[in-house]
Image (tube, rainbow over all chains, first blue to last red; front, side, top):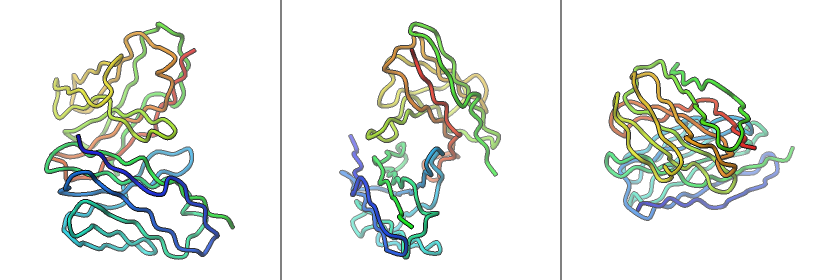
Length: 110
Length: 113
């Protein structure tokens, strides 16, 4: 079955540094989503990408979908303490349920 | 805003008890899902439903069942709770097809003793 992996598992950064998490699927995806889960909270939908090579931005967050539609990345510029949490990607293959990656836990040191 | 409400934030149950976890969404979503979340294992799909009276097994359905008698309500049932079912349970819903983001409930942290 489809598998979605994320690296790194953990990332500790100093406030102001950049952060990137990578998501890789074992199969081609039709669309990929990103979620953020704050400590003690639940996953919250951030964005969806559907086109090959697509890039979307939300303030300091930049999301990219790979050309082959098998990988994606989330980049945060100049991290802030409010960015702390676990970032999940989730991929779907043409109408199938989304499969979630294991997440990347981000810690931001002030 | 779409709201997904889970009936309990924390639950403590004894081994062998029958446990009901309730989830209600208020946006007329067709699709509803139950996940469990464990450290290092991410989100694992237990059961899902695309319509009333419809249910499908996810990746880890053993020891669980579900009920969807009304569109807005999706219940997860632990037939005979065991300690390895101690976990965070998350309910989610989204619109038809797999083209919309999931809205998650706040979760139920279940402890089986």
